[in-house]
Length: 450
Image 1 (cartoon, rainbow, N blue to C red):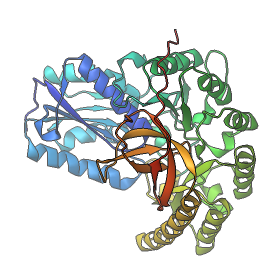
Image 2: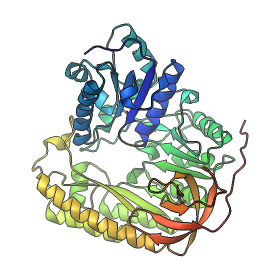
Image 3: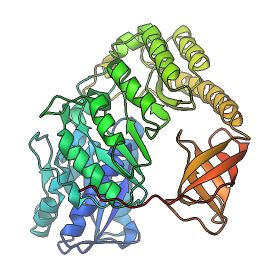
Image 4: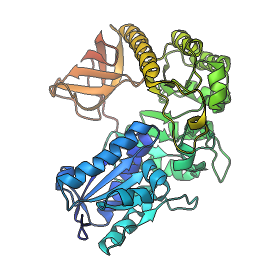
């Protein structure tokens, strides 16, 4: 296979979380700055960038398979691998395929222009590792959405949960200065963005390197930026969720009525083996305090099924916790051993058949709970921010309410993407709501924040 030394077009494929999606916006901005133009499809691009996730094993296998497919589809395409798989696999990716022109870890994303130049000179660079002093220029980010904007506030993670590869692929925690975050948020608001999502692997571990301000203080300032309709933040670790953060959540109506709060397991024994540093009861007490302050909050969570040593009794503890908390959404996965993590060596490992059976039971009950919670909203009117056409019917709009629930509704002909409309909920399923517009569209003015 030959590497294309004269790259003019690019295409980006993204796996994983919001952090990865935001990294792809940064990558696209860098590539555009270096003169490359976006292609309509991977097969038409001179450069295909795979921005990868390695939190679980199967996505890694899919990425390796995807490299092979792209190489066969267009032998002249250069493939660049970015993200967590790049950090994890590094040089082995170059050895697997001559079509891979460069490898860039999450800590080196801003150097993709350097990598492209190196490829044009016949090199195959590997840029991995972490630099706390790396330049972060938010002005170069290419944002696809005109209504929602993602803002990184902290990178990396210091928790070292025994199942998680993130501290190895994204490094230790590095917080951005509060003033820099605020400047980026104000820029987004002045550009007409209605909703800002603050990002971090463990976002409530945030500490401003200049002032020492924590996430509650940052969130207070962000929520006060003129022109912002909604602010949300993800992902919170239960042990860092203090009363100050709860108070900000309760006191600012434009802070999302949605919170992602991973529990991982309902069993104290499994939580201990996971090194989560909280107990089941401490988590339940936290949920109680949050719901007392913000009763309408919609909670989602992460759960790992089949962690090494998980007994049927441990799994039943998780199922019982679902009944007690009643999450609006649950992201659940079978345990996947990851390189370098202690849990990969734990015994006994649970069989795939047992994991699958437990996941099926868990998802079945989660869907029932979600449907029940959504059905309780039928007849109510909620404020919905329009994202765009519904994927199922282009004659319908799709948007999200203040609690992050997906809402589909027929167009009336006057509203546009980015408008806020009042929608009366008529039907409810496990994963979305269906309604009708009952109020006119609201267009917030674009403001200048200096």
